Image 1 (tube, rainbow, N blue to C red):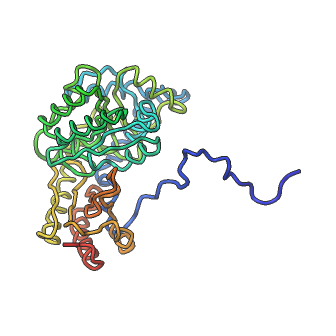
Image 2: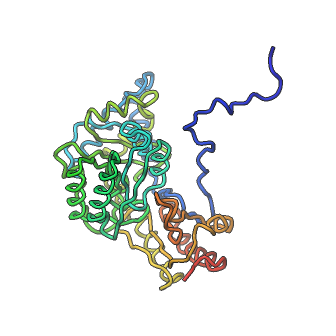
Image 3: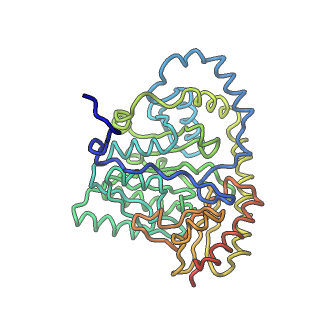
Length: 399
């Protein structure tokens, strides 16, 4: 006999699955929370023309499921790009295309960790990765940083301490170029030191390089992967920042045995062939001219944010001046609480993420990550002034 009333799934849910979905991305008049790129630089006409050309050539292949590793011609383009830009010698067969870099990160976490394992990160880490690590029951340990990146002495001390407690350290996850959320680029000397220290402890390095193309000034720094001769560096990149997040296309580079494990846990085939065709056809003709145009637009917005921070906060706060990327890290005096007023600021039209959301230990309530990629330069300038007003009005400036 059929039961009456609404069926309950309460006893059926996985014990490992969070009860609530991820919070929706905030929307506000002045949105400095989410790292959207500049919508005016998305090459819509070029992508449409490129897709038409690619479909005329290969459209009938959409009848097949995508290769699990992704479109071969796009993997070949990635390999050429990495050789030119990052000094990496990569076989296209060691490249796997993913639905954005987040899927690559999740696949690798799943392939390399068990609940209770430890993963090292910078002391403030991309919150998407932090959430995924916690989702898989990983113990996340942040390592102290300064303006040059991870502090080698702190890394050595952390690894020695964890070894003394018999902790299993699976890898060091790092965003060494235009770090999210701190904005700095790790120096070459630091990269060499980090690679040596992790090598001494038998710990691989997981290099997330998804912002590396967004350089406005300064010189590129060699990738961890290019300095590794032992297959100890896993590499992730993305097309989201140079084209559009909505196209959902990233990639990972790793030794075959790692890729095989990562792919074994992936449901279905590779990412959208439709997106891959448009991206490959467009970028093989326009990649570097488009990147240059986008970076000039981002540089203007960064400069607007820095100028407004100077006028609106003066000596009452500190912030970095990144050479690229999408983020400025704002640090108010100890005692300021940007976490307490974050929801109210959002309600009044200014969105940001406070520092504790990026910290494995929950520290940094006096800090905020400010993204300058999406709003116009004028909106960025006005929005920082409004942020200062809101924080002052609600007593969040500390001091």
